[in-house]
Structures are given as structure tokens and as C-alpha cells.
Length: 174
Image 1 (cartoon, helix red, strand yellow):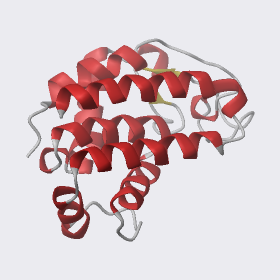
Image 2 (tube, rainbow, N blue to C red; image 1 turned 120 degrees about the horizontal axis):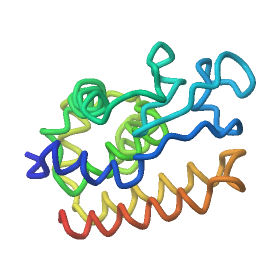
Image 3 (spheres, rainbow, N blue to C red; image 1 turned 180 degrees about the horizontal axis):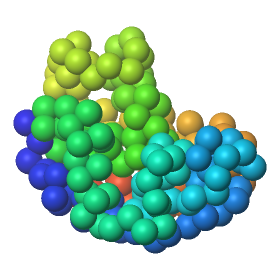
């Protein structure tokens, strides 16, 4: 279904996720996902210590990150079964806020039970809904989610800019 290839999506993603960071305030940079607990190993190419605590994050290569994103994120979302204009939105949000959160917010946007499973019921709801409505509702869900986080004052501007960029991609993909 998606005309957006993984390689194209990955090039877009790396525009947001390229640099190494070890910001102590970001729970994703800690191996336990809890600020101040575990090791501060950071995030590089969007691959975080919280999600991949056993990886040498600082020294991860771009090709390694690409393989991880294909296997653990793109394929896990059934990305090839989702409309191109939606798939990048979902994938980017999953990487930024977590797989379960992204799936549930998309399900809320299309009016199905938010069980975190992108299966036949969710796919049917996505495919039968007006594409622009899904994009608008999903990104509204995304922004509402971010504003409720305690880290909004620190990272909110960056998240808002990221969503704005995703909306531009949605217009191109639509």
C-alpha cells in the first residue's frame, strides 16, 4: 500500500535523528529509561540507550541504525500496509515517543479501540477514513500527547517543529 519506501523514510528520519546526544535530562539517554539511574549512554541516529541498553550507542554506525529501524520499527508497524501519507507520520512518532504510544494515538485518530495492535481492524479503519482527516486527527493526538509531558517546557519547541515538518511531508505524500 505505501509508496514511500523504507530508504526514503530513513533519509527523512535522519534529518531529525542524526547527532549523538547525551542530555542528562532526557530519559531516553539512560539505559533504564529513568533519569539518573543506570548508565548515561545517550542517543545517536535516534537509537536510544533506553530502548537498546546493550548497544554501544556513541559508536553505532549509520548502517547499523538503518538495519535496526527496518527490523524493529518499519516492519513491526506493518509499514508497507499503511498509506504513504500516514506511514511516515506513524513511524516518526513511534521512534520519537514509543511504538505503543504511536499505535494507540493512530487508533484514537481513526476511532478504533486503542489496543496498540495495527491489525486488520485498524488497517480497515485507516484505509476507509478520509486521508486528510486521519492526518489531521493523528497529528492533533500527537501534539496533545507532547503537551501533557512534564518535559514539554524543555523539548516542546523541538517536538512542535518536528510535527510541523511531518505535516509538510504528509502534504507531499498525500
